[in-house]
Length: 122
Image 1: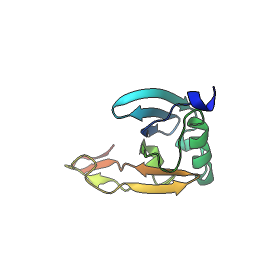
Image 2: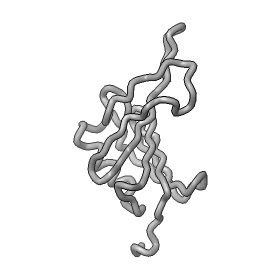
Image 3: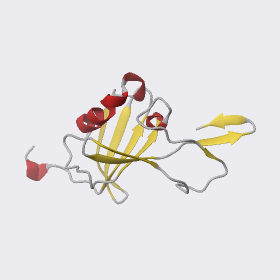
């Protein structure tokens, strides 16, 4: 694939779980391409997250100005950065995202949600 053939997303969506990393190159609401790897949060040390992301998006034209929105275990205490849970009821993205600027990327991590009674998180 030549540089002219590389996909240039407007933004990237990530679902970074314990065992897998999945990404979507997006233009508005249109999916341009998908990628996945076994670089889940449970297999990485803190310094391994940016290289894992770089591997995932290597075929796409991505720079620090490309918005990346991540959800899942990447925001857990053991993840890349802790994004504290928000108490429900909550408005969608009504709170602050944890922002990571590392490895040439700017990643916003969406916090999970929690309810107190009965106690549960997602």
